[in-house]
Image (cartoon, rainbow, N blue to C red; front, top):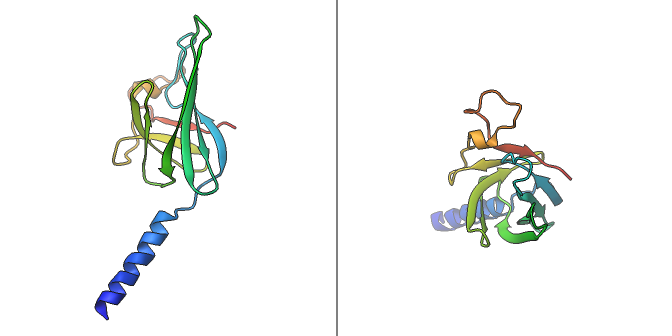
Length: 137
């Protein structure tokens, strides 16, 4: 009886964990790392599907030649803890978590990062800028 009860609890926990409700569906753009004019900073986006699949992508335009580079990857099912994003073209890997309004750059454990690279030109204290971005539609 104990084994059946434990298996039942494990199944319920697995189902509830694996079916985390997505905060929204559709495509949203974001800009965690502040770019500077002329650098060709990639424009990042994510696309959350109704089935919970999360796609991350970017579009980057070379300022000198006008050549466009883009990539989109499937990061798996939505999870509120942390998601790994791994782009192959530029061998770029980062970790994020997001909710309905913002996306956060994190470490592997989900701790939100702080960096001077995340500061806007207007911010004075360049040491303590939280790596986050509002979503744009």
